[in-house]
Image 1 (cartoon, one colour):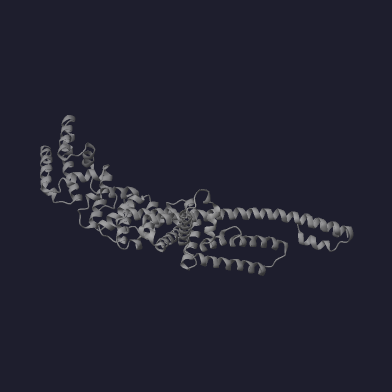
Image 2 (cartoon, helix red, strand yellow; image 1 turned 45 degrees about the horizontal axis):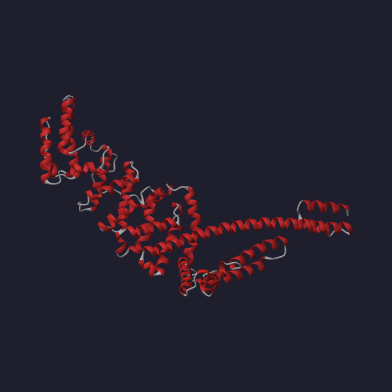
Length: 494
């Protein structure tokens, strides 16, 4: 028996429990008693350590999941509140408001590559509802979600929500373009920025700030072309669209052209040049700018050869005639039409960036950390959407109903005159415990609720499986019962 006894201790020290237990059967007398006692003590100590570790890990994981879920539901609740405050219809129609919340959750679930979170999508939707004139026009509710997605894509490219909202108001509301045409115009801006080597925000900002200067152009496509051409030319000259357009607008009317042209022509004639004001007034902006630049540049060599004082006087005379600054005049003297990168040349309307390219670029401008956080949230969002789509539970509606029920319960207590010390936990609990909705929530989430019981079942199964005292079929039966309880509770909440 000595060999078996030695083997037993080797197996026990190696934590080979089943083999050590089998080896005890080969022993007898005192050796068997000592081996049995040692086995039971060591096995119990091992399981206690493992159980503590598993319980700690499970508790930590459960705590993290609970905190994450609480944060998500808190965001959802805030969106509910903001929608109610922002739209009187949502205040009266809980289902319509809940549907918008579900659609925002669906948009979040599909936008993880852009790092978009539910909270920021809710803010964008609210901002659009507040800022867009189309809020009071038919069809807004059908396009609001797609517009929310679009402005956040543009936001990822550096185009602020305020800038893109102004763009939508201009083209969709003022100029009457459809939402699709309005979005395409924005992509024209993006393609123009790419072709001319500029950043998106600069092109959008310059056009938006100076759009008023081009709104008298009836054809909106021609308006966009003219505005972008002038933006690039002003950028290439180192000046602003406003400065260039102020000069060109002097020749828009015959009276203005005659007045400015006469003074300019006097100086240019003295230098051997000329300027035809009538001709300038008949030209469009781009052509007029080229004519002005050519006329000024034709006398520039004479100005340079006139000597310092005479040159200054000639330059100041031209500045006085045109109201140009010294910097803008110098820029005009040296600007060469067509020197800019291709993208603002005459011809067909500008092309638009494709939706796929736009999204790829927006995703490329999003950090990995943002994408990771959005991906984790997307799991919850798509679960919420699936629950609503299958009719199991509309979480936004349930949250609002819970809030309304709590308000009613507390309001009843207050109205009844339960004040001061009487407004205590016992009274509130009594009122809530009589409400079916809160009873259902408590059965699911409260102490000893179904979720707690299911967690306990899983932990118990893990321990019993290690001990070899349970089979899979028994465990499945227990979990199935809890799932059935959850389904009944969910149906009641709904």
